[in-house]
Length: 403
Ligand code: F0G
Image 1 (cartoon, rainbow, N blue to C red):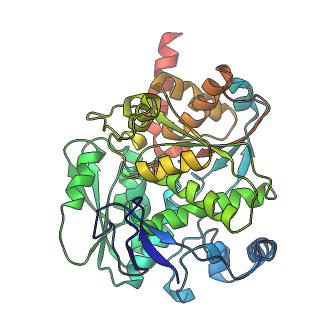
Image 2 (image 1 turned 120 degrees about the vertical axis):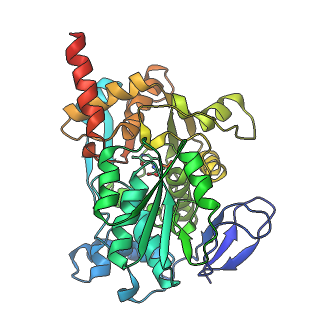
Image 3 (image 1 turned 180 degrees about the horizontal axis):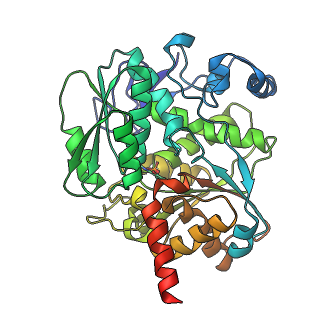
């Protein structure tokens, strides 16, 4: 039976799948969904998943739910809250590859989802579960994208939404989305970390928390890797590069690779590279120091507001993913992010600043000889270019002014 299990080594507390718990009742660590080996063979499932793209069943048209054999899915079709998320492009980045000094670079653009970020992949799963377990109000702390996504899916599912944002720090575009979808917006003085603490201190009985510490979010986000591998005809790339903020996404990708390998879908896994912004880099600092504990950055600061996070809650899971995939953790400066973002724009793709950490990171690794120039690389772009238009206009103005 699928169930929830505490992620802390040596604890192993288990809970039923639908209890709605965010933390282990014994030790307080994060929970994860324990999947069962699917009943069908990997080669059959790969075929079924692909064929579902031609199906008219709503569940099959979602790029998340067509992979339901690897998700906690024991719902009726009508229980599922979907906006037809997933099924996004994998695009070659030619100019980006040249700029970074590599030859084989693809972008998996998760910003090309209904609300413009990867959050939709986890949100369809988390809102479906919240509604299934009777939630009246759902809430999250957010640097903006989770808020926009939660607001949209809650509206879709007929549930009240409340979002806690660091006051004055989320981009206007993301705030506008949350308002458009009818969420109640609470502005909290401080950074994302304070907003999350404020949320976690709420004790209303029927309020459900949908940050990425929610294990169902992680499950939905996992499917990005299934879809990616399907697009690569299940030829595993050498590197998978992802921005790191609260570290939910990297945790989910690590879980996806672990399950795919354990269940026989792939024989080896890509090396995971997590790239943080230098002003919000607690995991990169920890990695460099070789320490076993994470020291939060108390005043995180970066132009990539989506990842302006000093105390990432999923760091242990992300670190497990790094160890499992023989991965790397690193950081890049705001100037490097700005340059990389402009190059991705020139490829006609575009992304928000946080996503550009990936290309900046690849360039740095290639220049240092730590990444083979002919490696097969996939960089995950997490947010749409229109998520932070102020940033684009200001940086273009600065460039024009400096000519
Ligand atoms: N990229 C974008 C565009 C994001 O919005 C986020 C996180 C990340 C990367 C980092 O992902 O937290 O899973 O490591 N945004 C959250 C939010 C925190 O509230 O929208 P992570």
